[in-house]
Image (cartoon, rainbow, N blue to C red; front, side):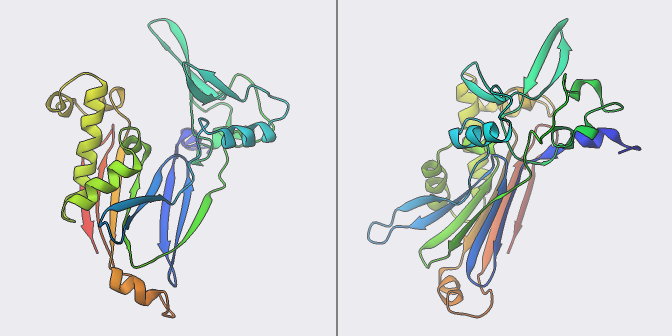
Length: 267
């Protein structure tokens, strides 16, 4: 902190999946989402099963928790332009107009300037300083954890940031993965989300792709996708085995507003 005070303003959502002795454990901080694709016996269709709980002020349960943590501040969550935001904000000046930028997530890694008041002071950049001090953490660092017993009909799991889910429903996402080969599934999901973003902006997908890095954020949120494929035979054996024997194969794609596209595949 004394050497790099701006690190107190750095934060991120986090989504983790771990297979241990059979069950799948999914831990989440923020508004990323994990969705399982489950094969429907008899029909051959694919059913989405959401495996994570999102932490966003748009959810009434999260707003209630915020209000219980801050009983002396009835406006800790505010509805502005039909979007729920956390009251805590940083401010910047654009075209000589003071603008308050509010965040929607209620839990995260980092962002200690919103969790501990001793980090909400100079030499932190003035745009992050809150106009008044706080006694309780505004953002929580407590993850939500979901435990799922893997079954033979469980085909794959999509781990993705909110940039994907802003444009694709759970059903649309699992349908895309189920309809193509394993290779390139993450890339296909990102493309579908970008096509949705282009449609919302009333522009062509080809034009959206030409936008320079660093400017993307004005058109769509960061998009990071990982698809893990499960070996159904080994899943069945893992439910009775003493140790983890689940086979995983995955493809990942990240499209961030401040970085180039990266694709990874592994097993």
